[in-house]
Image 1 (cartoon, rainbow over the protein chains, first blue to last red):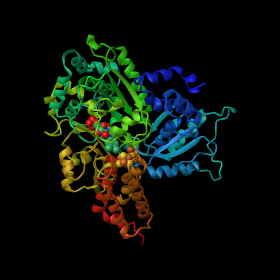
Image 2: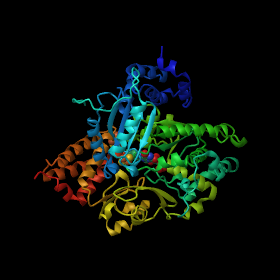
Image 3: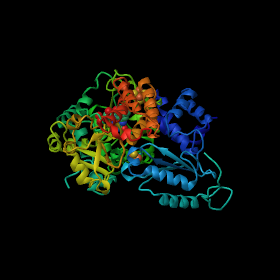
Image 4: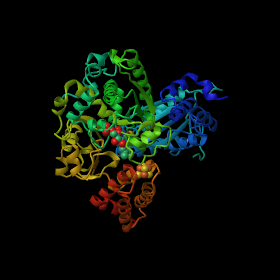
Length: 184
Length: 416
Ligand SMILES: Cc1cc2nc3c(=O)[nH]c(=O)nc-3n(C[C@H](O)[C@H](O)[C@H](O)COP(=O)(O)O)c2cc1C
Ligand code: SF4
Ligand code: FES
């Protein structure tokens, strides 16, 4: 049984209705977005389900996933922080900001904190170049821009997010203390 | 402040609510077009206005529409909201704060080419804006501005959004079409051109968000009114995205033909710490580094005059470098950007950006020799005119101009 279809029958119907009936392939990217919003990443099984709905080969879906940088094939931290270090932001201190933030979290760019909560990534221009340093946060299906950042401001925000994110098996707010060790 | 046409929301708060937009003349042009004008009338008015595409190439919009053959149906219109050129952040402001004017423009373009379906292709990061647009489109459908038999006439129109997923190349119109069709975003060979064989193999118009946002005004007030601002060959206003080492970066809507000096020193309030300005990049990462001489500063920002400085105006994302910035570092950023964004379809671009990155990394690491600077310039010039699409070409212009104008910056990085 196609799990994606079973879980989102209405959404998938809506997606398919956007395109001519003989152009189901056009639904590949919208379906990938749908799946990723649901689970945070796209598994091999999901690709097969999407291939079935869009009537294409699963290898074709896989190559689309590989081509586009926003699609992830592995779960990241609960919060993805994507810092723009592209040219215009770099001219306004975004590299120094990224280094500072990573030092504070004791990870390297691209890395995830040992508790699996926070991933920090370097990304290209996000069309907010006049408000650098800036990052985009991705949490489940929430995408948000954070502009005019300092390391302190970002850490304050992170701590407040932590307070609202609780582990399912415990009621304790999660700590943001790095647990040490080498983790890339 | 003069009247804003595109960033009207800055003068009229709440313009992103339908009721406010309607109160300020919203969808009057749309109603007028569908009830009183023929598609040919629209094409002619836009031709007369002299409106040129704001997505980069500056191609005349009315002429572009008239290329669609009336023998092949259906026709499609796709709004290009991929906005990914580093230094460009104008379409995002329109989509967020003046979205109905953009949608009305897209509707007018659709009517002009008798398309019954239009799409908005947005970069994946604009996910929240796409959701909001979906809601607005539904609202317009239930209010009778979209759907079947509009205003009792025999014309129907539907609009759908489509999200990209993080690939700069998808802003290139044929890569965008591939991406919409669920494939890798790689440019198509031309001909055929999208006007003849575009989306799903049918005649297609692709226009930039800002281009489309001009249309309601042109249809409402006429070509002559539009031509009252800007220059003879570049009429109208343009949003300049100003960034880099200026005190007040941001979007500024100004008549085409405004000088760099006015943009940088009046609107941008000059350089951070009042440092000396060094270079101007008028088209984001795809620019030459133009030395900021008095002549350059007094150049009017229109397609012809900036072109004469040796650089396209492009999407008018003006990045400012000052004396504190080393040109080699900037070039390292642009090379890495294009290496990352090369779609890999053609060898000169794929390999060229790879090798340029190797050499600039060596230079930036202080491990290069004098001849490496020449090697870098030579890789870039060998790539020129050999790439399948403009991205490959874009990747070379900052390199060549920076080495020509700021060789000392590279030399300062060499192995001691
Ligand atoms: C590499 C590359 C990236 C581009 N990116 C964009 C973009 O993000 N937005 C855009 O409107 N046009 C972009 N363009 C230009 C489009 O191909 C196309 O010319 C434009 O959307 C046409 O609209 P216009 O006539 O209204 O300007 C890009 C072109 C190239 C070669
Ligand atoms: S020039 Fe670069 S981006 Fe364009 S088709 Fe060739 S490899 Fe792809
Ligand atoms: S360069 Fe960072 S948002 Fe544009």
